[in-house]
Length: 418
Image (cartoon, rainbow, N blue to C red):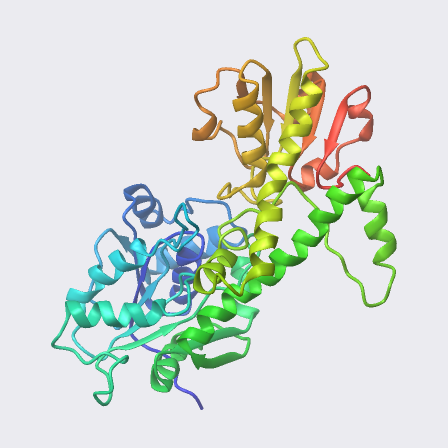
């Protein structure tokens, strides 16, 4: 039987992936120390409170803290294994910003004694995991690192990307297959022992760069398929066709499954990860680049339609339904819905914008400077509006009666009310 890890795990980064990973380990009798630079997150986790919305996480977190298997701190401790789950945003030129990964590596380095496992979960361009090994080698020349050919390493380094869907993280973290890529085969085996603690899916061992690339490919694949649907929406608008009807009919073919168009692509994965492939191979990743450009252009297209319609009214009120990047979550990172609202507010600063989202209760910081922008309950926003812009397909919006929209100009970017 394959080895299963036993020891203490430090999870560096208590965000949407790091915290659930810490919790799922802690609820299986692994001593886990969560590390984050944000004192509010550390304080919340220490009290057993979840700092963001995710089903099933609240009870598990509270239980782990009560059992004493999970604690939180702002300082990287001594541990037997380290999981790095920090952000990897992109720079202005769409290259990966690895500064958070580098900082986490620098914080871990002084704590290493030999024999530890270091796993990078942060989605990264191919070669990043090996960079972690090289950075550690520079910081700790007294240790043998796995990127060298100096015999068995003192530290085992691997990449294990997350593959979960927000809103289902606690379920999919356990049931989904995992890819574990080691700098050496032994590194992969040692890292896999951590995930055997809770993962019921198959654990696929490979090299670190292939694991990094596989995660990027998963999201680029989805991005390309969404771009096809969004491009169809452009074509259908130009030809005065209903894109939803066109897709419905095309999907009657047994080997066709076109996705639904929307106001763009958001979140920290699909909207970001394909650029890492483009950055790694700019001359070859032509289709991936084009898909990103199509999806990135969609918020501007939607906003411009609304802006042009506003010119037909003397003092229009616009209800924008939804701010998050996808349905039924509170995450506004890289949200195309929020981008649409920002573009409208910037172009028409005097137009009253009513923001309704059951998961976002305050005006986001990027819109705080606009006096004409405020939050409202969904039904109140629709009642007061001349123009209704449906941007996120939250369940609450799907259940609304179409009669509420009578006499309104409606832009249904998700096909909720067809």
